Amino acid sequence: MKHELECPYCDGIASLHIEPAKLSFRKEEFEVNSYFYKCNKCNQEFTEEHTDTITLEQVYNQYRAAHNILFQSEIQKIRSAYNISAKKMSEILGFGINQYRNYENGEVPSESNNSLLLLIRNPIDFKKLIEEKKSQLKDSEIPKIISHLNSLIKSESSHTILSHITNLNQRPNRFNGFAQPSLEKLSAMINYLADSFPYRVRMNKLLFYTDFLSYKLRGYSISGLRYAAIDMGPVIDEYKYIFDFLSSSELIVTNFVKVDNDYQEIINNKVDLSLFTPDERNVLEIVKTKFGSLDTDSLKKMSHEEVGWIENFPSKSIIDYQKYASLLKHF
Image (cartoon, rainbow, N blue to C red):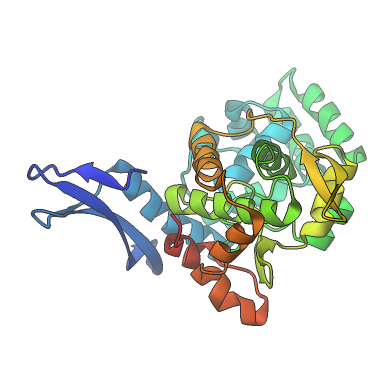
């Protein structure tokens, strides 16, 4: 999102503004950060497609969280895990022919359809549903789908134990930037930033700024992880467990070097940008460019100036993306 645009009403320049507002959706009212431009010359206010999208997404995300409605990423993840076309998913679930694709593209499901989507996240329940409707489906593809489901049922997630420790199993909410937590994306972020920011203390600051800037500009974090306000500044909640898991799983490669008579862990990056959208890559590049010449102490000091850290540090609590991303001081 651009911080300045040419004014459509005069020859002036309009600046981006973010102000609290209230919007309604399905007969409920939600508090959001409203994005709009205001001309510095004629004082006219206006929005464009991107500002409208971010403002409305905040409403939809809060509604989904309040009513246990699945998020876009979760709906996409279901079909990806089962390796079924959107058309076939709609057929199995009894939706309209394009309905599942519409949900993947952002349409908010009705409560009845959402209940069915919640059910089929479990491969055992999805298998039961397919077997109950097998006579109606009459499709040569069904045995293949059931075979795949059997494999999923037998397999165990490599994240199971870690998820219980680190909240990686949490659904999208305001404390993880309304994004599905992803260790794969986190490791790719670390590997990208590690070229210039090798130590854990500094890496945590860069990850915080990347995720919170992403939320400010896009309405979603990238990693889907939570950040706690502790004495060293904002850090990934339970970051030690997560970094150790990434290292032991070789999603990141780490070793130790001696610096000033002390050993510090560094990260040797193997950059893979394929997991990121162009907008996410842009956010990563902005953060990397802005902080490329700063040492760890300077970056730590800057993070202590952020309202999200200042207000949450006394209780060492989790920093709310919805409340604090728009207040980033250094972006």
